[in-house]
Length: 359
Ligand code: DP6
Image 1 (cartoon, rainbow, N blue to C red):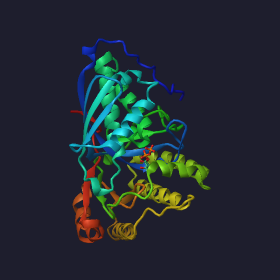
Image 2 (image 1 turned 120 degrees about the horizontal axis):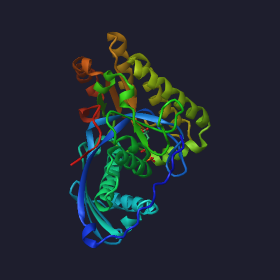
Image 3 (image 1 turned 45 degrees about the horizontal axis):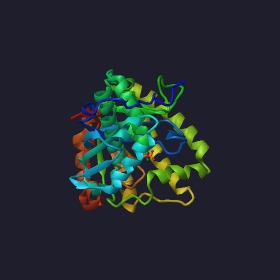
Image 4 (image 1 turned 30 degrees about the vertical axis):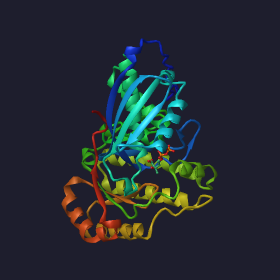
C-alpha cells in the first residue's frame, strides 16, 4: 500500500495564551513475537514485525508547554535527567519538518516507569510512545486537529516510530503490527496497525513472566545492533525469513494454533541472538543463566505438554509466554525451578494489555 511518508507540516500562527497547556499519557512497553532487527532511511524497518502490547510495564509522562524556543527540561523519576533530555530535544529538532510549531514552545516533561530501572527491560518503547502521544495531544489542543481517534493513534504511532522503531507498536491494544506485508491489509512501514482482532481471543489472555537472568546494562544498544545488520552476511535471508514467519504466525494465531505460535516465537528469539553472534563485531547477549532457563522451559513443556514458550529481546532476560488458563501451574514451575537462576530472584509479572491511555 502506498502511504505518504510525511504528514503535512503544521505551522505556528496562534496567540500566546493558546500555546500554554499540559497533557499526560501512560504508554506501555511491548514484546516482539516477530522481531524488528535492521532498519534503513528514516527509521524504516528492513522487515515487518508484530508484538504483544504489555500491561504492567509502562511509562507515565506529563508534559507542560508554553511559548518559548524549543527548550526541553526533563525530570525522570523526579530527578533532572540531562541524557534523556538531550535525546528528546534532538528528536524534537529532528521532526521540525513535521512539527515546526514545537520550535516555538518550551516543554517541561516529568516521566517515570512502572518497572525497576535495573531490570534490564528496554524502556524506549514505552517512553517514546508516551512522548509521541503527548505531542499529538498538544497538536490536538493547539490546532483542533486529530479529532478522529484512529487518526490520532496512527499519527502517534508514526511519530513514535521516528523516535524508536519498536515504540510505534505500543500505542495499540494487545497486538501491534509494523511493516509492509502483502498478506496484511493496511500494513505499512510508516506506522503500526492494530491487528488484535485478526487473532483467536486465546492470545488476548497471554501472560508474560519476565525472568531477569541479568539486570546489567546491555552490552550493545539496539541502534548499534540494527546498524550491524547492514553488513551481516545473513541479512537478506533473515529479512525474508521474518516476512515468512509473520505470515505463518498470523495464520496460526488466527486459528488459535498455539503449537505453531510457540515454534515461530522461539525461532525468532534465537534468530535475533544468532544475528548478533554473526555480526562484525559479534556479541553474545545471553548469559549462562539465560541458557539454563531456556532448557528448563523446554523440559517443562516436554514433561507436562503445557503450551509455554519463551522469547528474548536483545538481552539476556527471558519472556515466558503462556495462556491464562495454565497460569497457576506455570507460576509454580517458575517459582520452584527458575527463580533460583534469576538475578536476586527477580521476576516481573506482566500480561497482554490494552495499549496507551490518557491520564
Ligand atoms: C530487539 O526499537 O529499540 O526489541 O528503532 O533504534 O530505537 P530503534 O530500535 P528499537 O529496537 C528494538 C529491537 C527488538 C525487537 C523488536 O522490538 O521488534
